[in-house]
Length: 142
Ligand code: DQA
Image (cartoon, rainbow, N blue to C red):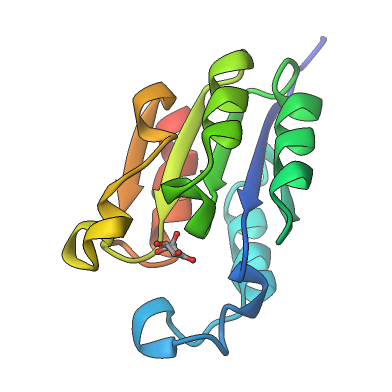
């Protein structure tokens, strides 16, 4: 029997490579790599991959690369969420549905974090649930 496994990618933007060290009172003290292993073990029926970049163009390239093939994209574009017309246009231009995600409650923070170039073209938005948000985002695709 032919069985097609679901493919989901998590794309994390700038400074998220510092999770665990960076402002732990906001983002927690777990590294993303550590958390990612627990996600993979929890969802063995899903092929989950992970990409992180601090470079806007690399995030756009990755969206183009996976955006016609994968079943779901979980995108935490971090600070670029609030500034990048290019990432918003990339999300609009691809076929794979994108869930925008933020670890912190961006609406309880500075005003500039309330703006998103991704939200209007995303399937949905999750924020304020810590790393658990990535788990909830995977469930939204199942
Ligand atoms: C963030 C929120 C952004 O405003 C911020 O620039 C980040 C992380 C979050 O996950 O809460 O770097 O996307």
